[in-house]
Length: 104
Image: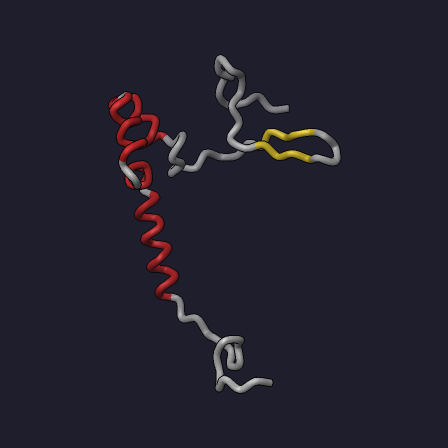
């Protein structure tokens, strides 16, 4: 088993994700690459906490959308919405809910 990248804390290793298998009564610790816009552990959030301390936490708790703006997720959401709007969706004739309204 590979060594975790970060040493365990006082309470032990805190995984980002666990997968459980009820039939075998076991869990697997899933590891993966860190997401650069994670609102919990990305470098931007960690740096903000290191420099601002508890004031940063208060903003995160009290200001809706603060972490999204801090990490850039808000811009990512906007880019995704614009990309969806620019897609020319083709709809087939006779789809449910459209058409001449005749019962079959």
